[in-house]
Length: 398
Length: 219
Image 1 (tube, one colour):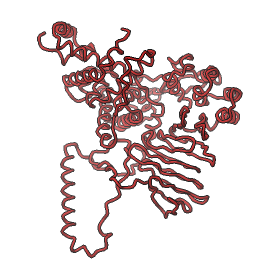
Image 2: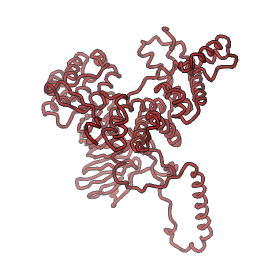
Image 3: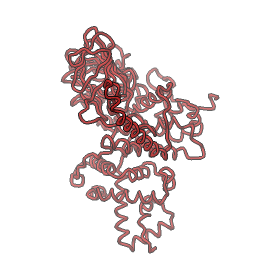
């Protein structure tokens, strides 16, 4: 074979060529230094690609897909919208440009006649929407949200539900805006609702104090200093975050309540989907629907547990997490655990001392055995892959 | 539809609590691609949510792996995987059995990846590569950690490739599609597939030439 074999080299490396063709490529490589050099590059690339690990999908995905399916199945709140075939896009853009030109010319030439009219006659453009990546790509024919103009202050809309909530120390009317850095406060008789871009809303209970930290395409973050909020968010995971003095609640597509007491401790109660609670220097807690998780300042998130866990189980877990309950509290937790409480036991694997880990694993495996490929030795060694596989396996009983 | 005709639920009896335990629907643990047949797809087309779930469980890891390595970001990969299955479920009625279901599915995966790339690069950096350490070859670390670092470097380098080269490499590696299948999924000729794979792998080799020693150490 005299012709160079560059285009066939990847197929050669992957064993895709027919035997005769592969033989010819092989012979050519023996004789052609240029192709041999290229082959070595391609082979290195192929071998490097083979280092990529397969990534199992996270366990929360089905819940999020199902939630969005529900939304799709619900009666459409919006009209079907216009859809243009790809070839029509340029024409549609041209038509829009011409329409704008026409409107602009009309406005320009009609100014003298309109000069005496009050200024509100001239329509102001709507404030630019806060950017947020929508869960699905924009439909053909739909204009994506424009980027926020420099100097335009980002804010969320706030609606008064009861009493007189205040933003930046000033009472709002029926609605108001909560700007970045501003506090929303409710007294004992007030409630308010924050519209979180186009992702959902957060209801703020009486006696609460909450601040908008940031709102941008990749993150919307509130800080709850005290009080209680109820969040309902339908968004890609990790787009909506609520800080508290003792932990950070990262939305993985869900609904939840979060309550912060005067000491800065908080309790998270997830009613749909999953929330991840992060704390400085401590393992994150994955809190699924029906579960709660307490946090304490200086400690971070405790261990999540299901709301229907027994009183003894919950009390012992509280002792273990926040009162140095140690082995005694752990004994009670393990003894009182039901199959569903494997949520708690799985989290405890990384939180107990190495000497106690075997007991936790044994009880966990007794309640719901590990999947294939997950071994006691691997879990006790805190192998991240095995822990994750076990967690995914356990979600069928959570 | 008759219940025995559908047979979509996989059931498994759990041992443990309460002795024999109950019969619990458990699609994930035992789910495999083999379990997805024409009946499941037909049930999906009729709007059966349990069938959707079976389909999801069978293919979620493959879709997620490609989305993850394509975007280089876990959150984006989750979002993209969601998009794939939402598109799949909302358009599955249009699927005709004259095509391979997996080809159709991978075409959705590719479209979502490329669409997301186009959409997100207008707002935020997409597929921004994690920083590479350039030190793998020299450090005498244990095999496990060496492999993990190596994988991290490869992932970062792949994230820097052009989207069309990146998706071709990921489809080839993770799905082991033939050139003809890839051509169908990517909507191009097998020759173009070969060209993209060649360019992609050579660029990868060029970016990661310093890892040659680490990669082939111990061989």
